[in-house]
Length: 192
Ligand code: SF4
Ligand code: SF4
Image (cartoon, rainbow, N blue to C red; front, top):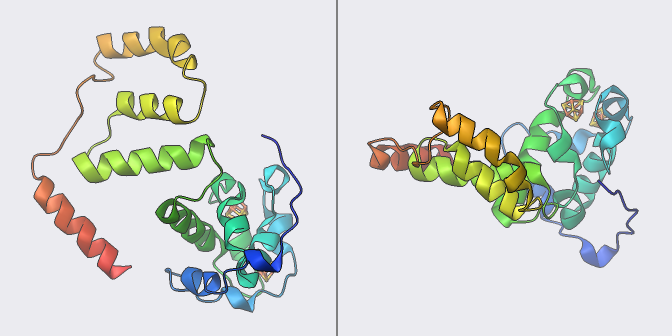
Protein backbone atom coordinates (compact mmCIF):
# COMPACT_ATOMS: atom_id res chain seq x y z
CA UNK A 1 0.00 0.00 0.00
CA UNK A 2 1.45 3.33 -1.04
CA UNK A 3 0.96 6.31 1.25
CA UNK A 4 1.11 9.72 -0.42
CA UNK A 5 1.34 13.16 1.16
CA UNK A 6 -1.62 15.30 0.14
CA UNK A 7 -2.21 19.03 0.51
CA UNK A 8 -5.81 19.95 1.38
CA UNK A 9 -7.32 23.22 0.20
CA UNK A 10 -10.22 25.21 1.58
CA UNK A 11 -12.27 24.56 -1.55
CA UNK A 12 -12.19 20.83 -0.65
CA UNK A 13 -14.20 21.50 2.51
CA UNK A 14 -17.71 20.30 3.22
CA UNK A 15 -18.77 22.14 6.34
CA UNK A 16 -21.76 19.80 6.82
CA UNK A 17 -19.52 16.75 7.09
CA UNK A 18 -18.98 17.11 10.85
CA UNK A 19 -22.75 17.29 11.40
CA UNK A 20 -23.27 14.19 9.20
CA UNK A 21 -20.87 12.21 11.39
CA UNK A 22 -22.24 13.65 14.65
CA UNK A 23 -25.74 12.52 13.74
CA UNK A 24 -24.61 8.90 13.61
CA UNK A 25 -24.78 6.84 16.78
CA UNK A 26 -22.29 7.68 19.56
CA UNK A 27 -20.44 10.30 17.52
CA UNK A 28 -22.03 13.43 18.97
CA UNK A 29 -19.03 14.21 21.23
CA UNK A 30 -16.45 14.44 18.43
CA UNK A 31 -16.08 18.20 18.60
CA UNK A 32 -14.79 17.89 22.19
CA UNK A 33 -11.48 16.59 20.77
CA UNK A 34 -8.53 18.51 22.25
CA UNK A 35 -5.97 17.01 19.83
CA UNK A 36 -3.94 15.47 22.66
CA UNK A 37 -2.86 12.50 20.49
CA UNK A 38 -3.59 9.83 23.14
CA UNK A 39 -5.64 7.91 20.56
CA UNK A 40 -2.79 7.85 18.03
CA UNK A 41 -0.22 6.74 20.59
CA UNK A 42 -2.59 3.98 21.83
CA UNK A 43 -3.43 2.68 18.37
CA UNK A 44 -1.64 -0.57 17.40
CA UNK A 45 -2.39 0.10 13.71
CA UNK A 46 -1.41 3.78 13.57
CA UNK A 47 1.89 2.94 11.90
CA UNK A 48 0.03 1.54 8.86
CA UNK A 49 -2.49 4.38 8.60
CA UNK A 50 -2.21 7.33 6.21
CA UNK A 51 -3.75 9.60 8.87
CA UNK A 52 -3.51 8.78 12.57
CA UNK A 53 -6.77 8.71 14.58
CA UNK A 54 -5.95 12.18 15.98
CA UNK A 55 -5.58 13.56 12.44
CA UNK A 56 -8.84 11.90 11.38
CA UNK A 57 -10.60 13.70 14.26
CA UNK A 58 -9.08 17.04 13.18
CA UNK A 59 -9.90 16.52 9.49
CA UNK A 60 -13.47 15.49 10.32
CA UNK A 61 -13.97 18.52 12.54
CA UNK A 62 -12.47 20.69 9.79
CA UNK A 63 -14.87 19.37 7.14
CA UNK A 64 -12.30 17.62 4.92
CA UNK A 65 -14.86 15.08 3.76
CA UNK A 66 -13.06 13.72 0.70
CA UNK A 67 -9.76 13.29 2.53
CA UNK A 68 -11.41 11.46 5.43
CA UNK A 69 -13.63 9.22 3.31
CA UNK A 70 -10.81 8.26 0.97
CA UNK A 71 -8.40 7.58 3.83
CA UNK A 72 -7.24 4.03 4.59
CA UNK A 73 -7.44 4.72 8.34
CA UNK A 74 -11.05 3.70 9.15
CA UNK A 75 -10.62 0.50 7.11
CA UNK A 76 -7.44 -0.41 8.95
CA UNK A 77 -9.00 0.23 12.36
CA UNK A 78 -9.10 -3.11 14.18
CA UNK A 79 -11.90 -1.96 16.54
CA UNK A 80 -9.70 -2.74 19.55
CA UNK A 81 -11.15 0.22 21.52
CA UNK A 82 -7.71 1.16 23.03
CA UNK A 83 -8.14 4.74 21.84
CA UNK A 84 -11.69 4.97 23.07
CA UNK A 85 -11.02 3.85 26.65
CA UNK A 86 -8.08 6.25 26.96
CA UNK A 87 -9.51 9.37 25.33
CA UNK A 88 -9.57 12.13 28.00
CA UNK A 89 -12.52 13.78 26.23
CA UNK A 90 -14.47 10.50 26.30
CA UNK A 91 -14.95 10.52 22.54
CA UNK A 92 -16.13 7.21 21.13
CA UNK A 93 -13.38 7.08 18.52
CA UNK A 94 -14.06 3.51 17.38
CA UNK A 95 -17.69 4.44 16.71
CA UNK A 96 -16.51 7.46 14.73
CA UNK A 97 -14.42 5.08 12.58
CA UNK A 98 -17.55 2.97 11.98
CA UNK A 99 -19.55 6.11 11.13
CA UNK A 100 -16.91 7.20 8.59
CA UNK A 101 -16.99 3.74 6.96
CA UNK A 102 -20.77 3.88 6.79
CA UNK A 103 -20.79 7.31 5.11
CA UNK A 104 -17.97 6.20 2.75
CA UNK A 105 -20.03 3.22 1.58
CA UNK A 106 -23.22 5.30 1.27
CA UNK A 107 -21.43 7.99 -0.78
CA UNK A 108 -19.35 5.48 -2.74
CA UNK A 109 -16.17 7.30 -1.71
CA UNK A 110 -13.43 5.07 -0.38
CA UNK A 111 -9.86 4.15 -1.35
CA UNK A 112 -10.39 2.73 -4.81
CA UNK A 113 -9.70 -0.99 -5.34
CA UNK A 114 -8.77 -1.37 -1.65
CA UNK A 115 -10.09 -4.84 -0.69
CA UNK A 116 -11.61 -4.05 2.74
CA UNK A 117 -14.27 -1.50 1.67
CA UNK A 118 -15.03 -3.50 -1.48
CA UNK A 119 -15.56 -6.63 0.65
CA UNK A 120 -17.83 -4.69 3.07
CA UNK A 121 -19.84 -3.39 0.13
CA UNK A 122 -20.14 -6.73 -1.65
CA UNK A 123 -21.00 -8.55 1.61
CA UNK A 124 -23.66 -5.90 2.36
CA UNK A 125 -25.14 -6.30 -1.13
CA UNK A 126 -25.36 -10.10 -0.81
CA UNK A 127 -26.76 -10.07 2.74
CA UNK A 128 -29.39 -7.40 2.13
CA UNK A 129 -30.52 -9.17 -1.03
CA UNK A 130 -30.49 -12.81 0.11
CA UNK A 131 -30.15 -12.77 3.90
CA UNK A 132 -27.23 -15.20 3.70
CA UNK A 133 -23.62 -14.94 2.61
CA UNK A 134 -22.38 -16.79 -0.49
CA UNK A 135 -18.61 -17.09 -0.16
CA UNK A 136 -17.97 -18.09 -3.76
CA UNK A 137 -19.78 -15.05 -5.18
CA UNK A 138 -18.23 -12.78 -2.57
CA UNK A 139 -14.70 -13.92 -3.50
CA UNK A 140 -15.43 -13.64 -7.24
CA UNK A 141 -16.65 -10.06 -6.89
CA UNK A 142 -13.79 -9.18 -4.57
CA UNK A 143 -11.14 -10.44 -6.99
CA UNK A 144 -12.76 -8.81 -10.00
CA UNK A 145 -13.24 -5.44 -8.31
CA UNK A 146 -9.95 -5.15 -6.46
CA UNK A 147 -7.26 -7.65 -7.08
CA UNK A 148 -5.76 -9.08 -10.20
CA UNK A 149 -8.52 -11.32 -11.69
CA UNK A 150 -5.76 -13.78 -12.66
CA UNK A 151 -5.34 -14.41 -8.94
CA UNK A 152 -8.60 -16.33 -9.22
CA UNK A 153 -6.81 -19.05 -11.22
CA UNK A 154 -4.35 -19.47 -8.34
CA UNK A 155 -7.21 -19.91 -5.89
CA UNK A 156 -9.19 -22.26 -8.17
CA UNK A 157 -7.73 -25.57 -6.80
CA UNK A 158 -8.62 -24.58 -3.22
CA UNK A 159 -12.07 -23.40 -4.33
CA UNK A 160 -12.74 -26.71 -6.08
CA UNK A 161 -11.73 -28.67 -2.95
CA UNK A 162 -14.09 -26.55 -0.84
CA UNK A 163 -16.94 -27.12 -3.30
CA UNK A 164 -16.25 -30.87 -3.45
CA UNK A 165 -16.28 -31.22 0.34
CA UNK A 166 -19.46 -29.15 0.61
CA UNK A 167 -17.73 -26.28 2.48
CA UNK A 168 -18.63 -23.83 -0.30
CA UNK A 169 -21.60 -23.78 -2.63
CA UNK A 170 -21.93 -22.63 -6.25
CA UNK A 171 -25.58 -21.89 -5.54
CA UNK A 172 -26.40 -18.50 -4.04
CA UNK A 173 -27.63 -19.15 -0.48
CA UNK A 174 -30.89 -17.43 0.43
CA UNK A 175 -33.42 -17.23 3.26
CA UNK A 176 -37.08 -18.07 2.55
CA UNK A 177 -38.76 -14.95 3.87
CA UNK A 178 -37.02 -12.08 2.09
CA UNK A 179 -39.96 -9.73 2.67
CA UNK A 180 -39.44 -9.98 6.43
CA UNK A 181 -35.73 -9.23 5.99
CA UNK A 182 -36.55 -6.09 3.96
CA UNK A 183 -38.94 -4.91 6.70
CA UNK A 184 -36.30 -5.51 9.35
CA UNK A 185 -33.61 -3.62 7.43
CA UNK A 186 -36.00 -0.73 6.81
CA UNK A 187 -36.79 -0.53 10.53
CA UNK A 188 -33.08 -0.54 11.43
CA UNK A 189 -32.40 2.24 8.92
CA UNK A 190 -35.21 4.38 10.33
CA UNK A 191 -33.93 3.81 13.87
CA UNK A 192 -30.31 4.89 13.20
S1 SF4 B 1 -7.52 10.96 22.51
FE1 SF4 B 1 -9.52 11.96 22.28
S2 SF4 B 1 -9.14 14.12 22.69
FE2 SF4 B 1 -7.14 13.17 22.34
S3 SF4 B 1 -6.75 13.49 20.13
FE3 SF4 B 1 -7.74 11.49 20.34
S4 SF4 B 1 -9.93 11.90 20.06
FE4 SF4 B 1 -8.94 13.85 20.49
S1 SF4 C 1 -10.10 1.15 17.83
FE1 SF4 C 1 -9.13 1.46 15.82
S2 SF4 C 1 -8.35 3.56 15.87
FE2 SF4 C 1 -8.76 2.95 17.98
S3 SF4 C 1 -6.83 2.16 18.76
FE3 SF4 C 1 -7.97 0.39 17.99
S4 SF4 C 1 -7.31 0.16 15.86
FE4 SF4 C 1 -6.68 2.21 16.51
